[in-house]
Length: 251
Ligand code: HEC
Image (cartoon, rainbow, N blue to C red; front, side):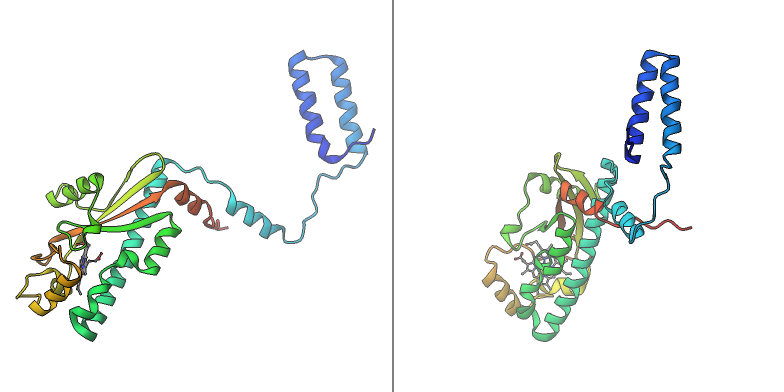
């Protein structure tokens, strides 16, 4: 009988279960000993020769190992992902508005106040399985109207019942990240302040041309202007998390 090394484990487990079931029998023990002796004599070398690139392969396998993520882990990841999308979006919005206003005033900057549509913001959100949107306490673009769930969360920020960004599970497949938006600098007021004061009437005419139903004026510095809401596809977020290299252990 020729025994291959890879059969060893199987053979042993067969012996083990058999021996457990049938209790101890001397004949079984004899077979066991003979089998073990045969393996030793056959010189079955248990040492595995190192294969080329083995370390890299092991690292790659480790990378793709499915991590056991709890709902708590996933919610925390969505929170972190949402925070980073909003941070990038707000930095870019502030920079673009500043540049636009300086270059050609409100008329030039009007199209820039749509950070949810910036390529970089969209790409970052999609990487985490997220779709970014904004809504407002009073709307300029009617398409930014919130649905009932979003409106209920926005109302909590308005009443001060909620202050920080948060994540809730919408259903089994989706998580909802929300983060309040404030009138955080003077630039905002040039388009969301008071007409005749921070907003010149000429500038407001331009805004009205494009947004005839505008209601997003009369805001004050520091006031709640609206809210980010990012819906995360749970599966896509988990796939992203599983694709992250594990932190290397220090020796
Ligand atoms: C140059 C004019 C301009 C400036 C400056 C500006 N916005 Fe806007 N804002 C707009 C326009 C135009 C829209 C409509 C965008 C759209 O079509 O979705 C808008 C929409 C929004 C919305 C989405 C809700 C809605 O009303 O449709 C929020 C939130 C918002 N702005 C916040 C801000 C904040 C915060 C600042 C300051 C950092 C700011 N805006 C500065 C012109 C401006």
